[in-house]
Length: 195
Length: 174
Image (cartoon, rainbow over all chains, first blue to last red; front, side, top):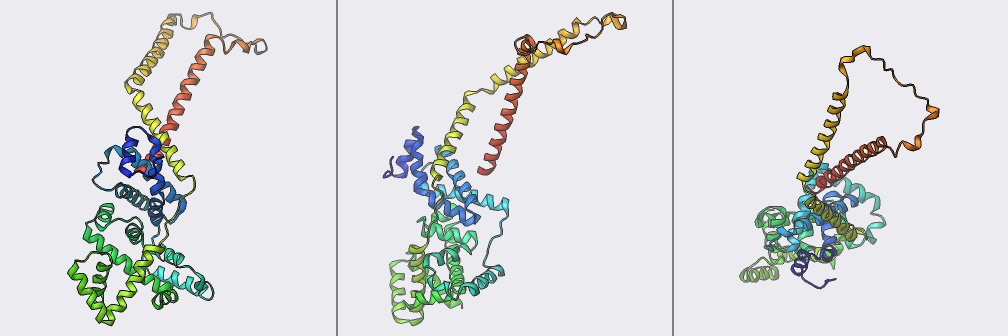
C-alpha cells in the first residue's frame, strides 16, 4: 500500500484502475470525516453512515476532482454537505448557545459532579464535552481549523461562505467555547490561568 | 465591552498568524506594556494551545475502511452491470415476449368454434385426482411454461428489490 504517497499520487493510481489504493485515503482521513459528521449527528451510528457515504461519493466523483483545492478540502466539503442534508432531514435538536437549555444542562451537570469528579476530569475530556455542547456549525469550524488544518479560505470553501465570514465564525466559535468553559468548568479554567 | 472585543479580535488575528509584521510588533508592544492586554493574551493563548493539542478526534469502528471499500466495490459492480446491459436490448426481449404471449392468446381464441354456441355436446371433464400422475407435471409442456412464469416473476421481484436498495442508498448520498 502507498501509505507514504501524496494524495494526488494515490488519486492518479485509483483513476488508473487501482481501486484498492483508495483505502489509503480512507484510512488517512476517516477520523476527521467521522468527527465532522459526528459534530452534526451526535450519534456514532449515523456519523459512521454519513462518513461512509462521504467516502463513497468522493470515490464515485473522483474523476471530477480537478485538484484546484486540496483533496482533504474537497472531501470535507462533501462530508459537510451530506451532514447538513442529514441534519435538515432529521431536524435534530441542536444545542445552541443561544438556547437557554444549554446553560440549564450545564448547571445540572455541574451540581451533580462538581464535588469529586471535576478535579479528575482530563483537559481533553473537558474540551470534548464543551465542544459537544456547541452548535454543529461552531464545532465544525473549530474542528476544521484546529484538527483538519484547513485555512480560513478552505473553511469558507467547505461551508460555502467567504473567508472573512469564516474568520468571524471562527472568532465567535472560540468565544462561545470560552463561555461554555467558564460556565461548565470554571475551576479547571482557573487552573489553566494559574499555570 | 466594545474595546474588549477589539482587543480580543486583534489578539486572535495574531495567534492565527493573520497579522502583518508591523501589526505583530505593535501587539507585542501592547502585551508587554499593558496588563489588560497581557492578561487577555495569556488567556487566549491557553485556549489556542489547548485546542491545538488537546482536542480529540473521534475514531470510527475498526471495520470502517473495509466497509467503505466493500460499498465502493458494490457500486462499481452495479455501474459496470448498468453499462453492460443495454436498456434497448432488455426492452426488445420484453417486447418479443409480450408479442409471443399475445399471439398465443389470439391463436387460442381463433381456434374456438364460436358458432356452436350451447349446442355443443362437450362437457367438462371429470378429474379423478387419485389417478393423477404428478411426476409428469414438471416435465411436460405445462411444467416448462409454469417454470418460465416462475422465473420471470422471480426476476421481476429481484429487480424490484435491487431498485429499492438503490433508491435507499441514493437517498443517503443525496
